[in-house]
Length: 120
Image (tube, rainbow, N blue to C red; front, side, top):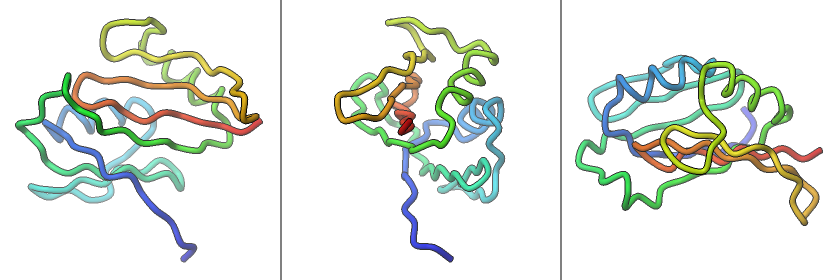
C-alpha cells in the first residue's frame, strides 16, 4: 500500500452525509455508530459523528487533489448543486490560481466540505 492521508470530517448525521456523497459517486466502505468511510475510486473521505456541530461556526475543511477537476465539477452540477455565492449546498467554479493549479469549492451546511483542486 502506498502511504496516504485521508481527511477526517465531522458529520451531524451519517445518513444525510452518505446520501449527499452517494450522488457524487461515493459509496460506504465502513460505518459504525461513530465513524464512516466513503470511497470513490482511490479517493476516501472519513467522517466522525458530531451531532452537536454548529455548522455556521465550523472551521472543518479539506482539500482533495483530483486528476479531472472539471469532470467532478460537472458531476456536482448534474446532481443539482448550484453555482452561487450563498445558500447550501453550493459550488464555486474552477478558477486558475496564481500557483498554477485550478481550484473549485463545494460548501455544505453540515460542514465546510472539501475544496476540490486540480493541477492542469
